[in-house]
Image (tube, rainbow, N blue to C red; front, side, top):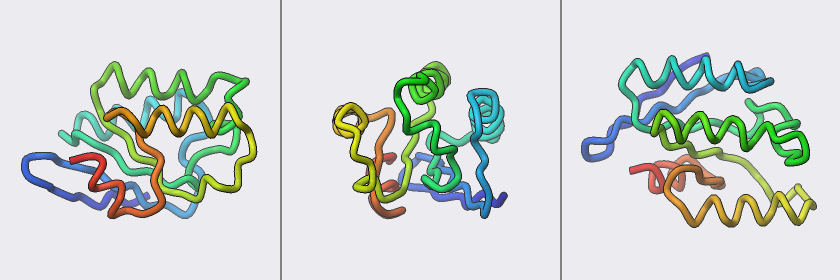
Length: 118
């Protein structure tokens, strides 16, 4: 795992780059969040392929649990990926509603992520 640091204005953003799944459960997300938080980052960019596919199955409540942790720490999150592959209406609605806010954004590129997080 590599952390690429981005600074926009006074906002420190960590882009996590890895070839493997980093978040398999809520505990993994909390560990990563704690790591990022204590390094002084205000935002986090993760890639869809670094998150277990279970995250995108809203029935198991993993996404809600993980996003609540980010809310508690006040660390903003952008997930970069191609979300058009998901056919679930509830997931599409979840992504749409998330993108209206400032805490969590689902985007297609790192540049979009940086724009959402600063």
